[in-house]
Length: 329
Image (tube, rainbow, N blue to C red):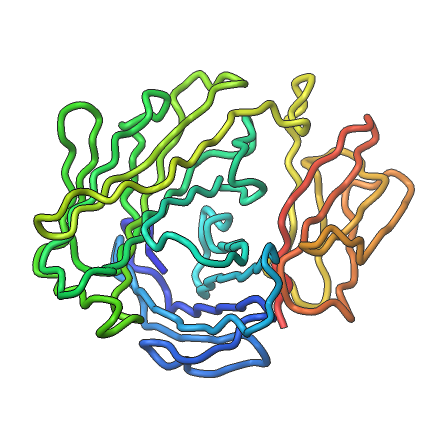
């Protein structure tokens, strides 16, 4: 949780809802309470731009199907009013795999709709995560990561995210970002597997103007002490025209409240809505409503499990708009 404003925040409540498949084991800061499957922490007010980080450990049960998508969500709230509420929620989709390279790079678009397509007019950011693990035979004292930013990424929009360990970051010639983890003392996986992992995150915007068909390719090199670099996989994102904004249509779908509990009210910036659907993350429709054209529609959420849903609404002009809904418990 991070206070992005120059003012002191109000008291902060942080809630985390792991995918139902995952089994909670522990956290480096014990939750203040557990409500069903939702973990909750309460913090005193955060100073301007102050962050609070929590690491949660979960198990993936044996027998979980390879290819299954696990979706977890996190959201924060405060009694003080805010100008921007859209950055108070975050959801993460991860696909279950078999054996994998523990040193990898991942990307997620800011809407969370795709990790391979950036939808022009809807997505604003590309969120990158570089993960690393010491699979050697002794402690790593220093880890250095370098990332050569694709020419179609706007270096001026770079925002540093969180990391697993204290680090220094600097920009080198040639559009290279370098993170240095000095005295990290990262144990090898044979000695302490859970502690042998680390990560660093950042976000960045594509260059303007955003042109459909642009392919952004990015990778990172990871140096453990004086060993040769370990190259991550390439992550590739294609800029695509969003059907939501075709023909100049830029209406967005508003959901209040979000996260929601008993009901949610939809609005489309004064546009009339005629058909609304709520889909779970497997694509199954769990709610459907057809009405006379209305600028505001309220839908009851009773009987829906806590989790992340896609709300889809058809407008009177035939266009379709979407938004993500976080259903609390």
